[in-house]
Image 1 (cartoon, helix red, strand yellow):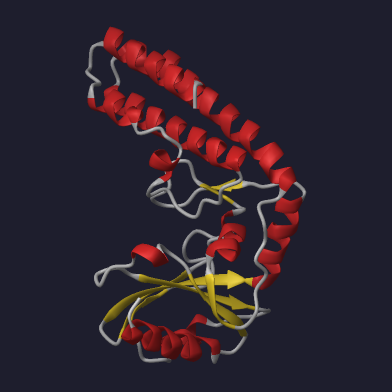
Image 2 (cartoon, one colour):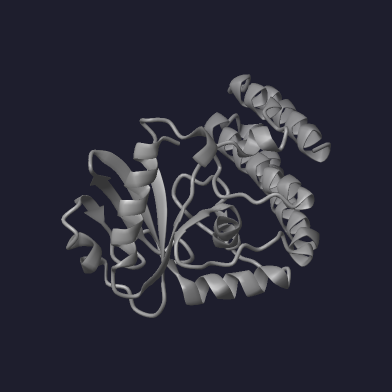
Length: 248
C-alpha cells in the first residue's frame, strides 16, 4: 500500500468517524492484494442510531442506502461512493448487533441469511470474521479468535445443508434433464461444503470469491462445465459431486 493510499485512508476514515454515532472505522477486503482499480471496503461501527443522511451530507458522490436497505439482518446497509476519484464501499455495522453475534458465535450458535451474490447466503458470524480480519483505522474494536464452540458446531450444520441440497438436485431435477437447476444446486452444495471445511479448520470467511479454492473444491468447476441435458449424465454429475464433497 502506497503512502498516498495511507493518506487517503486516514482522511476518509477520519471523516467517517466524525459522523454522529460512529465509534470506529475499519478497513476490510483483500488488503494484501489491493490493486489501483480495487474498491476500498470500509465499515462504520455505530452505537445507537445512525442516520445515512449524515453520510450523504459529506458531499461524496454515490448511492447511500437506508438502514436495512441491503436486505436487513447483519448486512444492514451501506453505500457505494466515489471519494477523491476512488471507489469506496461503506458498510453499516451496528455495534450492539455485532457484539450479539460475537457472543452467539462464542456459544457455537449462528444463523444463515440470504444476501445477493452469495450462493449459500451468509453466516451471521461473518461480521465477527470482519472484526478478526479487518484493520481498525479509527477507534477500538475487539479482535476475536475463532471460537472453539463454533468450530465444533458449524461444520455439521453446513454439511447437513449441503447433503439436503444435493439430494434435491439428484431426485427432483437430474432425472428430468434440468441442467440449470442441477448446476445451481451443485454450486450451492459446494459452497455450503466449503463453509464446513473452513469452519473445521477455524478459518474465517468474509465472502464467496475464493471460497471453493480455499476449501480445495475447484474440481466442482469441471463437473458443472461438463453438464448436459441428458438425464443420465446429470445423475452421474450429481453423484460425482457427492463423491467430491464427501472427501472434502
